[in-house]
Every structure is written in C-alpha cells, then in structure tokens.
Image (cartoon, rainbow, N blue to C red; front, side, top):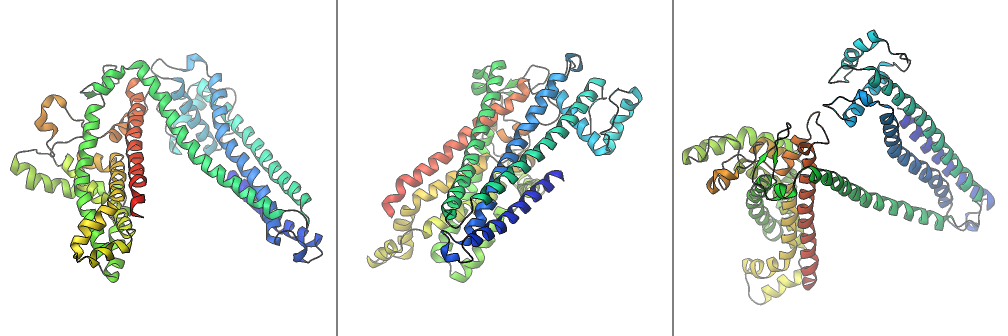
Length: 489
C-alpha cells in the first residue's frame, strides 16, 4: 500500500503541474493564446512529464536495486555456522526473507532483538498460521538476519519515498520556472516523448538480453559440473539428486519434436483449409461469424486444453486405437498431447494464413480469371504460390508455439522421457508416453532444491537450448517472409 500511495502522490503532483504550467503560460501571454509559441496544453504536458519521468524512472531503478543490495548485505551478516551441510546460503536467505515477511504480517516489527528461545519456538507455528510456510525451525542467526532485513527494508523504503518525491518536486519547480510564452514547449514535449519511447524499447531489448545472460551464466555453471558431451549426445534422462544423474537432452528433444510434429500435422491442414475457405469462398456474413468462432480457440487457457486431453481425448485414443491395435495401454501419449495441441494451434495458422491470403493483390486473381482459369485453379496456381512465403512463416511461428507448450504435455503425454534403449519401434509409436524439454524444466526447478547442483542447473541448459531452437525458427520465418514477399507486391 505505501508504494501505491507514493504513485498516487506523484500522479496528483503531475496533474497539478499540468494545470499550473498551462495557467502560467497563459498568464505570461496576457491571456492571449496566439502569443504563445505552442498550444497551451503543451506547457501543461511539459510540467507533468518533467514530474513523472524522473520520479517514476528513479522509482523503477530503486525497486530493482534495493532488494539485490539488501540481500547482499544481509547475506554477508549470516555466519557460516547458520548454513547446514545440506543447504546453501541462497536457501537460507530465502528463509530469512520469508521470516521477515511473516514478521511484518504479524506486526512484529517490535520483536525482541535479544533472541528468546520460547519466542523462536512458537514463531514458526505463528508464521504458518498467516500463510508463511517454513521447512525447518527458525534458529537465532536466521531470526537476527530477518530483523536486519526488516530494518534495511524499512530504511530503504523511507529513502525511496524521499528521493522519488524530491525528484518529482524538483522536476515540477524546474519546469514551472522556465514556463513562459516564448518557451518552446511543443519541441520539449515531443523530445521527452521520444526519450520515453526509446526507454520503452530499451527495456524490451535489455529484458531479452538479461534473460539470455542469466541462462548463459547458469548454463556455464552447469557445464562446469557436468560434461557437455553427455548432455548433448547422451541417450538417457535419469536425474538423481544423490549425484548419479544422467542428464542427456536427446530423449527430451525427441519428445518435444515428435509432439510438435503431430500438432503441426493436425493444425496446418485444418488451419490452412479454413483460411482458404474464409478468404476465397465464404460470404461476408459467414466470415463475420466463422472467423471469430475459430479465434476463440486461441483464448482458451492451455490448462483447459490439458484437462480436455486428460479426460476426453486420451481415453478415446486408448480405447479406440491403442488397445485394439496393441500399441499401448495408457491414455497419456504423444498422440493425445499432439492432437490437442494441434487443435490449440489451429487459430494461429488459420488467422495468419487468412490475413496473408487476403493481402495477395486482387489484380492477380483478375488476371487469372481473364485467362479463363476457374476459381480453384486460381487459388492453386496463383493465390497460394503468392501467399506461400507468408504461410510458411505462419507455420514456423506455430511450431515455435508448440515447442514451448507445457501444460498440455504434462496432462496429455505424461512426464516420462523417451527411452532410446527400447528400440526404434517404441520411439516412433505415437501411443507411447513421452515428455518435452519444458516439462522437465519445471520439474527440475520445483520444490526446495539446491541451485548449485547439476540436477537443478540443467534446467537452465535446457532452457537455453530451447531458446536457441525457437529463436532460430522465428528468425527463419521472418527471413522467408521478407525474402520472398517483395516479388508479389
């Protein structure tokens, strides 16, 4: 709530600044807006932006830096004796943060600095009652660190309020003082908006860079403990937190590609044929109903698709195909996940392909009709070749979406990795249970795990590999669209 109040105060000050800046400009022009360099609103916008930009920029930086700085300071206060042999400093720090959060919920900022044994014995239960769960009893070192964490957070928050309000008031005073009828307010506002837009674009780029770098650093730590040859070329996935793990990506990569292939086999023909019908054959009335109806599929949460796979598609495929053909006895299979994922991808392929087909110039169709071609011949020999680069790009984007899916795979295909030692027949059997890279990333990072062990760090290596694959597909899709689009314009 204090943060919300701070934001509201800054917004209120900006609103006051808008009115004050506009009034000052009009007063300096003697009430004649024609004597102003810019429209009166620009003078108000200038004051408001000068209040908002430095204040919110400083607030964002403070919120990013303060937690990291406090974690470093409090972590340095923890003695080595507070870290058990089976734990790490990072895990202990997570307990410190939870205890500090729980003390704040309990209103225990006035908790005793001198540790009372009876106070600590009942503290864990009291924290559990307010929703702060701890895996072990709270010792004196963790308690003192939590108090220090609270104190530093309180001081940091107070300094943040002072700094942000000072930046807002300073911006208000500075912009208000320079406001007069000759001030080039429009130029200043447009330049300020340009800076804000550049900042927004930079945030997106820097976020992507931060994601890649974080995965790179953790992947480097993983390969320092586990041979890269076994990771990329091994054939068995068998994590064991006792230290005897086999962490090969090939079984997971095979499951990912196989399920994605089945999904595309379902989605591409249905989506493409639907797009051809909607763009070339359907009337405006039918198109107005059918296109939104197809796009509703894109708005269904993936967990709902997963439940559909679990209780409907999986048992149906097992009872009517797998059991009669002797190919499997489980409802969790590649076919289950692939079929449901393909249904989910239909609107991606259909909508993009429909837009691409509609962008083909009508003059190409008219020329084909003028030469005596029928509508179907025109579609096959003129429209589809012209739209093919964009359609290929749409299919590759749908493939990237399929590769990154998790919930449908968990509920539809299970969590067992492909077993290369069972032979080629079971590897290509669509009614065998398999899993994907994304599912194993989630499972390796679930629970209280040691983020220094190869069994946990492998999730970052898997994530980086998946990122490279999807990035390659996206780049290929963009290249195909840009490379071949010009010849049809």
